[in-house]
Length: 80
Image (tube, rainbow, N blue to C red; front, top):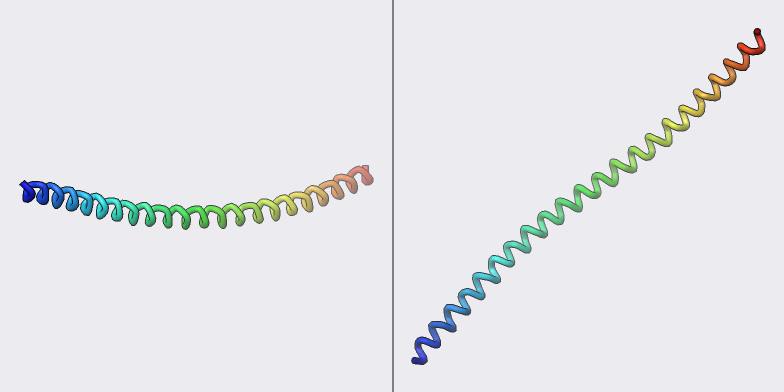
């Protein structure tokens, strides 16, 4: 009788070990995915920062061109 109890206990222990092993593998996979997502997020943040800088530069250039155009139009009005 105690042998059956021992076998059941051994089976439950083995099942627990298998479950722990699977969960550890899943944790490792999730860590890898998380690291990949962190890298993607950092890359996106760097790309965003680059685009914000480029946008600011383009707005500044647009203002310069608008001012030049205003000056040219003002000169044309003076000629007429």
